[in-house]
Length: 415
Image 1 (cartoon, rainbow, N blue to C red):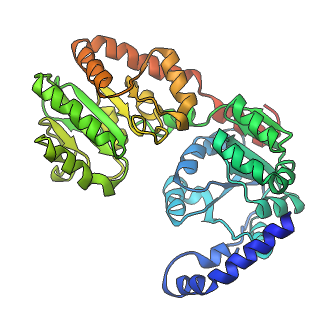
Image 2: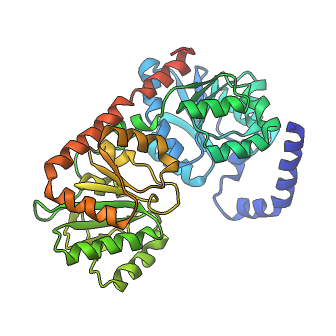
Image 3: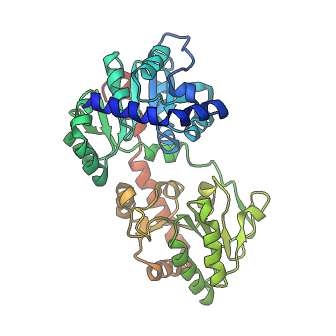
């Protein structure tokens, strides 16, 4: 099966070779790196090679590398990413603390070049980045394989089962598969990972250690304003939230609304929705500094500030959950001690959603009427909101500590 896979890779590369040549000649696309030409490591000690596809996986391991260094400061790190954006983010996060490069192509020669240059002790894959040839060759060359923060949703499991003859032999090569949940571990075992076990979710550590600011970076003009932040909202949710805002304004509910779309390309759509309902709003880009002068509605049309807006919220809504998208991560506002609201569609973050609901700090709503009622009740009892926010943070704290566990396993092979 691996031979058939390699043949398919060659066919894809042959068909795409003119495109690759053009990119190599006319842009900075890392073509040399993808063929395995990276800088040789000058030292000869222990090196752990982490493969993190892109930005999300990089954030997850950002709490693991320091934990490893705390145990053994001599361990060196290499980090490969699938995307150019990921490589840039890796450089921002880890700087000179790691060898950073683009993932080699699924070609034997490219992978061997990387391994010869790095001489890694371990190759540590994050979540579900299963590249059969890279993993097989690394194993053949004596590199120990680990899968950390492993996750496998039901839909993905069904797809991987169709290709089980390809992935089962690869998964058997892993020394440890450290899964987020029992269900994840069982699915990996079903695909052939004999050493799959539950270690927990590294995201809980990540949001507590790396994703929480020391203090609010944003200053709100005027004290005592009740602020509702809707983060990562998706198409369709803008209309639901606009209806809630209209009703709140008509009811004289003294609140300030901050809307943060998931994708900047949808800003114009949100503006149209607000304009159609005659809702006055301001754009974040019209405010030159970190002083936020709220009227009724602020539409955030800038990148990278969601965490900062969550930090000034009295209550936070996590988007992608009132429409069938699967829900976005509720851990960020929860880690900031904010009470969290989300809709019924939380399949992509089911584990975190259940933990926050069980803590009593989160609320699940079915639609705009529920959401308005929750906001109305919350406006009348800020003390209750503080209690719910503290419950959210305690729930995350109770699930933390996974980074240290993973670090100990990687350093010595035992928990």
